[in-house]
Structures are given as structure tokens and as C-alpha cells.
Image (tube, rainbow, N blue to C red; front, side, top):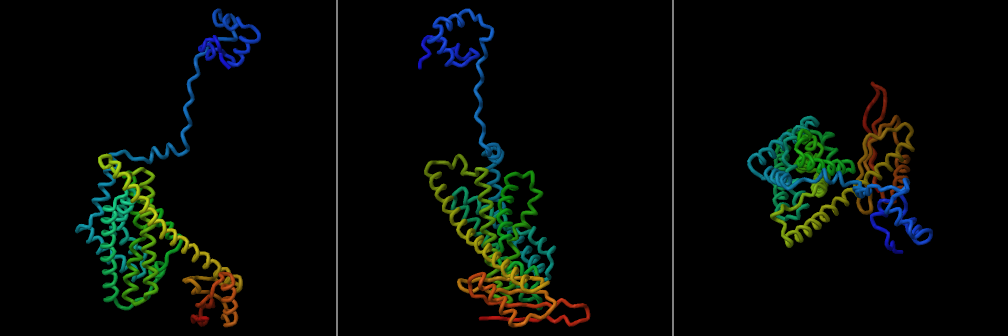
Length: 395
């Protein structure tokens, strides 16, 4: 279809459909369109201003991305600040030593406030942010520097905890130690969030007052203290549990920080952006992200499996023992066997046959061989015997 001799500006200015103009010209009155254009006799057909073009709607997250992105000067300041604080100089070593002393004594005394105080001065967060920066920018050199700084601080921390435990008089493993001997799903989630928000605070210095909360939430140093304490005590099972928790937290914090740096478009600076450099940095960044994501996924899956098994054990105990209260559960699973340790508050004794029945129910539900260890705390009135009974069942 061609508009023929119809003036193009008339189509845009007439208050009607262009197809209707074609219809007027070709069917009804070939000359009427020219009359309308020349004399403009009809008041209902008037010249109108051309409608402005509508702007394309922005994508849902465009505004957020724009606000999150940092300009080149701010990126340079963030990178410089992280590199400066992550250097293992004198103050770095002093903070590592004294945070190790404070946290170890807090763990031994089972004092949460003292442990938190030691976490506030620990210098671990800066080398970890340097690791995250190296992952996003694809720089092996930054990764090497961050990794070496973390290793140095960790060795100092463990050595301090070990020496204090060796010279300290005998003590009981309190709650502050026991809760840091296995990686749980909640702790991994906290570490991931702490790494993300820690990097956010460095990028936006207006909220640096919240940085202390990040150091507490990261909870990286207490597992190291527990590692040194259990090593000196010869409890290698708990020592490995504390080390795995430390490793899981380290990976989760690094991944969280790298994710934030990626979202705010931290990239190599302009003078570093040659085509060859961009290519190699991109390859390195992908490799590093994969290397971090694989063990992090394993820790999350393993923690989720343990959480599920603990829920199963608790539900079976509560459903088979009326008015029982499960105060503590510890599940350690291997390929074929699940070791469950349960502390139960109950008004009566638990017979061997009853415990065997509970054990079989757990094994049927989990679909694995179960080794069950039950600690029974009788709930009795004051004045009656309050001995703690122990039932150990092994297949």
C-alpha cells in the first residue's frame, strides 16, 4: 500500500487514522484529501503537534545497578584501601596475637562477651576481602597475597591457642567450644551474608559504623581458637570439626565478598585494560569462582543433610517418649554409618529395649546403619537423685 501523493506531514497531523486517509483518497473522493490539506475547512480535522516518542521502560534492576556501580576513582580507592589493610605488617601480627589470646581465654572461660571482644580486633577480614577482590578481577597476584596473609594470621592464632591451652590448668569443654566443632547450615548462611555486607561497607564508607557487626557475624576466629584448644587437648575429632567450620566460613565469606564486588562492577582499572589482559583476567575470574563454589556447595549440602538427620532423630525421640525434651543432638555421618549422640531430659529411665526400638526407627528413616548414644537427664523434684544415666548402643 502506498500513500501516493498524500503529504507525509498531513498523516502525522490529521486527527484520524492514516488508513482512513487512503480510503478517502482512493475510494470516496480522490480530491477531498487535497482540499482538506489546502483549505482545512473541517474543524474536527485539525493540525496537531507531533506526539513525542515514548522512552523505553528501564529494566526492573537498571536503577539498582546504576546506584550500586562505582565510578573509576571510587573503585581505585576501595582497591587501595583493601590492599593497604591486608598487608601483613607489625600491627597485623600484633592484632593476630592479641585477638588469639583474648578469644582463647574467652573460649576456655566459656565467656561469650570476651570472645566477641577478641573477634572485633582480629585482622582476618581484610585479607579475605583481598581474596575476593582477586577472584573478581582475575588477579593471581592479589589471590596469592591474600591467601598468604590469611595463612600467616591463622598459624599465629592456632599457635597462641595451643600454647595457652598447654599451660592452662584443666578445664571443661564449655558451650562456646562445643558449638564451634561442626559447620551448620545457619553458620554458613551467616558467613556468606557477612562477606557480602563486609564488602558493601568497604565500598560505601558512610556506613563504616556497622563494620564491627560484620567482624562478629563472620565468626572466623573462634573456630581457629577451638582448633588450637582441641589439638592441645588431644581431641582430634573435635579438632577436625573446628577446622572444617573455619574452612567453610573462609570460603563462604570470600564468595560473598566476591559476589558484591562483581555486582558493583569492580574491574581492572582502565590503564590495565588491554585486550589480552581482559581475556586472561576473565578466564582467571571464572576459574576462581568455580573453585570457590564447588567446596561451598559441598559444605551447604552436607550441612543441610546433617540438619535433616537431626530433625528426624529429634522427631522420633519426641514421638516415642511422652513429655521428653531433647536438649542436644550431634550427628556425624559417614558413607554407611550415622553416629548420633542425643541428650534427653525425661521423667523416667529409658530401657535398653526401648532405646533399641528408637534406634531401629531412626535407621529405617535415614536408610543407613545407626550408632546411637543416649545421655539421659532425669527430670525430678529437688531433693531427689539427679544422676545422669548413659546408655551406649553400638551395632
